[in-house]
Amino acid sequence: MRSQVSEGGFAQAAIRRLEVLRPLSQETIAVLEQAVLEGLFRAGPGEDLIVEGDTVDSIRIVLSGWAFRHKTLEDGRRQIVNFILPGETCDSHAYLLSTIDHSVTTVTSVAYAEIKRARFEKLLASDWALAEAFMCETLINSAIQREWTISLGRRVALERVAHLLCEIFERLRPVGLVDGNSCSFPVTQMELADATGLSVVHLNRTIQELRATGLITLRERVLTIGDLDALKNAALFSPGYLQLYRRNR
Image (cartoon, rainbow, N blue to C red):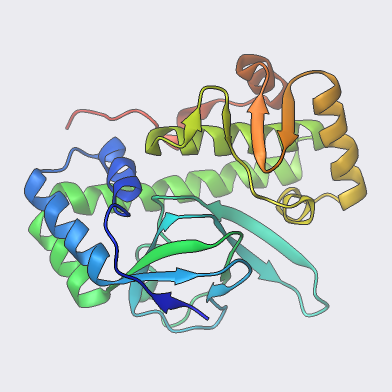
């Protein structure tokens, strides 16, 4: 069961992420931090934050821990369509729709904020830079979905897995969650298989191939990349779609 918590410092990942997209004033940061602290919750691993068909009246920002978006067929087959990392939202404008078309489930224990629609829209109206930052995040999520579609439709298994590892590494970098060439990687092989459209057996072979070439090490929920440029080359990865560098506006 989710539980409400009250503790400071959790807004930093979200603010770092938004400031990559647009520079924010100190006043806006303070107001956003207050909104986050007043709507702070925890959920354990494997809990649903959103279930397909839910009515959504707020935005949820993941502050620590990992979650994933997914669709599940009637026979139980699941496709993970994106991971949600610290500082990212669970669809910032989903409340505009009558119901949500996918589920969001936690990978790890997660701290997240819920900001009700009225308060969120007041925040956006008070600072156009903040509104643009959230709109940019929505556009980047669409760009990520296009890359995942290319992976499922055109990339071979090794490229598919390598591309996802590069993407996650680069998405963690702006929020300060990369340590040299290593980062947390709490995803199970089943979850990684469901994200890449591979069987667990095929995924395992692909991971072993990446390990054998020295491109990656996966140990104790930590990903270490031996040669990031080489991994990007193997994945045909170009990070432009992630919009990692702030543009002056």
